[in-house]
Amino acid sequence: ENNKSAYLHHNIFDGSDENNAQQMRDEINKSQLIGYGVYNPHSMYRVRMLCHETIHPKLTKELRLARKQIQRGEEGVNYEILYPILERKLIDAMRLRVAMNLPSDMTDTYRLVNGEGDGLSGLAVDILGGSTAIVMSSAAWCEIHKETIKSVLAKLLKQHQSYANVDIDIVWRNTPSRLRQDGYEVMMKDDSASDEDDRGEQLALVAMESSVKYLTYPYSDGQKTGFYCDQRENRLMIAQLCENKRILDLCCYNGGFALNAIIRGSAASATGVDSSQDAVDAAIENASLNGLDAKKISFMRDDIATFMKTAIEDEEEYDVIVLDPPKLAPSLSSLDKASRKYHALNRDAMNLINKEQGGLLLTCTC
Image (tube, rainbow, N blue to C red; front, side, top):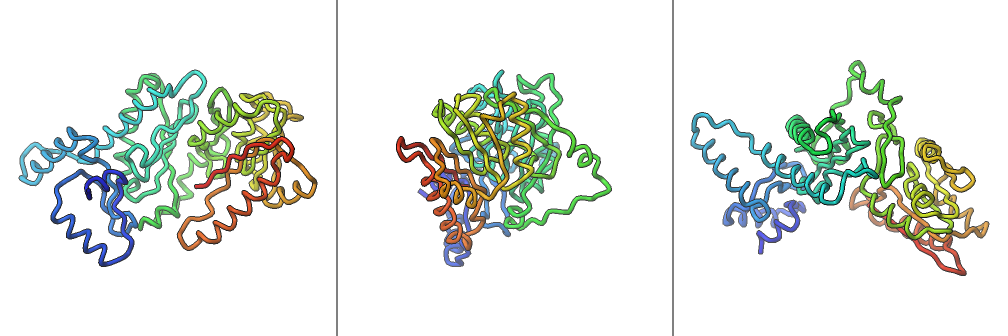
């Protein structure tokens, strides 16, 4: 049963309870090998499982043999255990996307690796425009093994049937706040070595998802950096419910839901609201890129709580509302405050739904 639990979650969690920690150590001493992971004594997740015997028995057997050879000091054994694990997991991730028709003629931008969903906790990879891979690191092990990850990814992308003749550029990004929680302090960038940064602010990459085009800035440090690939299915799903309806896209970022509502869903009108001017500018650029009529789709900078309060006072109503706020609870200590905020935002959004005909609210949290 303990092995089954480890398989289901893939992370061994430390709740800072010494009794539980000792019990875990005792269990580990009595248990059999179930796989391989990365250990971090400073992290809330003491071990992030990367290879489980239940899922990859052949690979686990190969790693066990190599480990014994290394321990015996056998000559000619030059083996980095992490490399074959990454290779196997990335191949699996690529095959799964191909089976889902990604990429395709309509979509060249998608999430190739989705963290724990692909058995690589703390690591995500997005493909933008069929030419750039954005690697997002949020765990110490990713930073420590950065070069190995990039090496395996570059090798496999070159072997991918869709990118064999494309020189995919790999851009590494990280989340300093998440890394600090993992006990890893990110080194500040050297301003003198900023050739990539200098070109980044100007270099725009056109990304396409479900035939909708977006301008992305993969080399920029601003909010216009990239694209939220994880909402691809939701954007397409909500568009199918928008014909001849009024749409409100709250925390719209670069306008994904609003654009899909007009282009894919034939909505009557769409309004996007975001507190970031960079995001609003990007959304307006994307509407222009797709040749949309400014009378049917508009974007504005405003605090969404303020916007909704004014809209309620003005008796505005919408048929479909998307509420996708940023993370409000980064830690357990902020959960109560965040819960109250989420409640207030969803309450106000519901008050803007068409009162006579009813409507739909898509609400998201992370």
